[in-house]
Image (cartoon, rainbow, N blue to C red; front, side, top):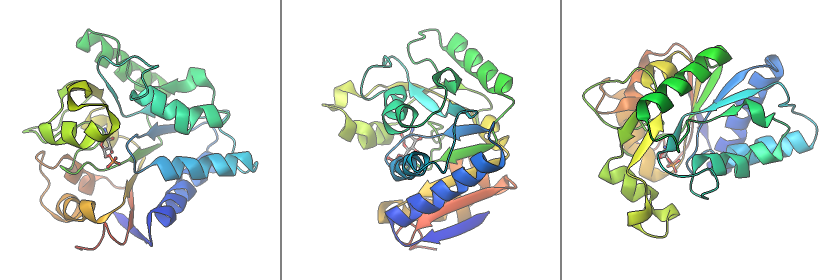
Length: 241
Ligand code: GLP
């Protein structure tokens, strides 16, 4: 595991965007695994800026997102589809037909998950997976559990995640209780993993996840077993290690 220390959020965003742009330049037809949450917003903004300058071309890229809320339509401004479209897809030349997220409006969880596993398999697996880190160590929506789930599955969000995401909704009642998320095996099979972390409030979980025991209670700890993980974190997030 490589840990790259950034000065602050902007520096973290630039460094992470550099890693992603290197991937796109080296393999224009790559499969990028993408993440939502507030942490990667600056990374996407930087990629958009470099695209606008003519330095990046996404025309052959395929994207697969980590997760989607169950029951939110794509045009709901809290859906992860909406987020990705707003922050990246509508601002670069990625082919919309090659951008994938789990189908949050598919009520049959078994079908939604097996369809998404097939999308990832058909794309040939993930070259570079971008991840944020939840306060409880979740990656995607893989919440603390007794097991590491392999493929895409439907999760009941924990109270702490519902509370953390409440800030994006009008009220806590509106936060969906379930989501579809890529599984840990799929994430671990990505050729490269890039984790972005920012802020003092993430310092304790950074220490636990990357320097503590490997346990499904802290799902991100499994990344210690991946052979090519880069963590780009700002000084505040690294303040306890
Ligand atoms: C969300 C997402 C995760 C994200 C995490 C942290 O619930 N499902 O993919 O990484 O929580 O979010 P943030 O970056 O806003 O702290």
